[in-house]
Image (cartoon, rainbow, N blue to C red; front, side):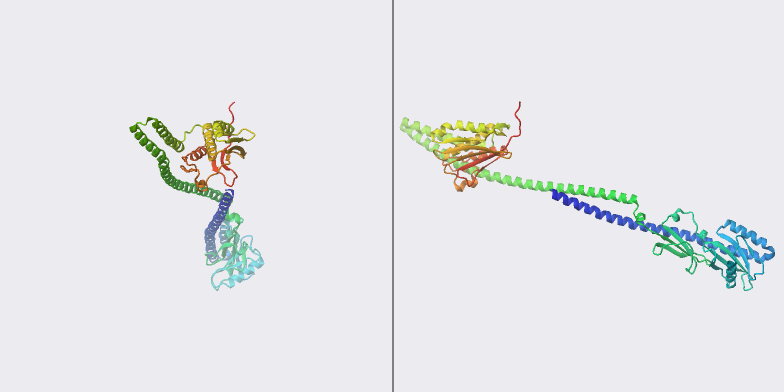
Length: 504
C-alpha cells in the first residue's frame, strides 16, 4: 500500500512539474510576443512623430530662404527675427545660419553659431546641391546634424542656408515606455554608416525604418532586451503555480473518486456473484440436507412401520406380553427420529444468546463432570491438560460447553476404553483448545467433508453434530479443524482471546 501511494505521489509530482514547465513556456512565449508587439506599436508611433518633425524642417528652410531672397543682406533683421521664432518654438533646431560662399561677405546666424569647420561643411553641401536639401552630421557636435539648402535654390546661389538640428531632441518623447532600461533607440544617417543618437547591441529584438521625410531619411531603429523577468513576471509565475497545483489536486481527487466508484462497482459485482454462489450453495445444501434427512429418517420410520405392523399382528393374536417389547422399540425409534430433527433444527438455526466473557476451563471441567459416568461405563478416561492461567473468550458459555461436549462425546464413541484429553494453550491472541483421543481415527474418505451435514463415520450417527459445532464456533469468530499428521485424532478450536475486563 505504501509503495502504491509513493508511486502515485511521484506520478502526480511528475505531472505537476511537466505541466508547470509547459505552462511557463507558454506564458513566456505569449509575454515575449506581447512585448514585441508593444515595441512595434510604440516604435511606429515615435517613428511617425519624428517623421512629422523632420518634415517641418523643410518648411522652415523654404520660408527662411524666401525671406532672405526678398530682403537680402540689408534686411537681415527679418531673417533673424523669423529664425529666433523658429528656435524658440522648435528647440531641437539649435541655430539658423546663412553662410556666404565668399568668406569676405557677412554671415547671418543665431547663437551659438557655427565653428569654422561647420561653415566650410555648409558651403560644400550647398555648392554640391542640385536643388535637394543636403544632410550631414555636424563635425563638432556628433549628436547633431546639418540640414542645408542653397539660397536662392538655383545655380546662381551664393549662400548656404543651414539648420543645426539636435538629433536626440528629434526623437524625444514623454512616453514612459522608452524610459525602461531594457528598451533602446538610435538614429543613423541615411547611409547607415554614422550613428547620431543611441547605441544598442546587435541581435536584440527591434524595429528599423527610415523616417518618412524625403529630405531627411534618417534611419530610425529601436531594440528591446528581453530577460527572464520580462517574460516570466513573478505575479504570473505564482498564478501559474497556484492554478496548476489546484488543477492537479482536483485531478487527484477526481481520480481517487473514480477509483472509489470503480471499487464500489467491483464490490457490487463481487457481492452479486457471491449472492448467486451463496444461493446455489444453499440450494445444493438443501438438496444434500433433504437427501440426508430422507436417508437418516428412513431407518427409524421403517422400523416404526415394521414395529407397528408386528404390534397389530400380535394384538390380533392376543399376545399381550410381546406387545410391550414392540411398543418400547417403537418409542425408541420415534425418539431417534425426534433427535435427528432436533439436531437439524439446532444446526440450521442455532439459538444465539448474547456473548459474554466466559472461562474456557470452566467449560472443560463441566464437560468432564457431565460425561464422567458414561466414560466410566465404557472404561474410558477424560484427562484435562489445561494452561496454567485462566483463559477467557467472548461467547455464550452454554454454546461453548455444547461444542466441547460434542467433541468429547464423539471421542468416547470412537472406541471402548478410549483415552480423551482436553488440552488448552495460548497462541498470540488466540485460545487453543484441542480434544484428542487414541481411537481408530476418522476414515480417510470422509475427512475432507467431516463438517458437512449428514456426513458421519458412526453407524448410528446423524452427521449433524460436527456441522453444528462448526456453526457455533464460527459465530464465536473462531474456527474448528481436524489436524492432520498427528499420532492421535485431534480436533482443534481456535477462539479469540477476550479483551473485556471483569466488572467490579
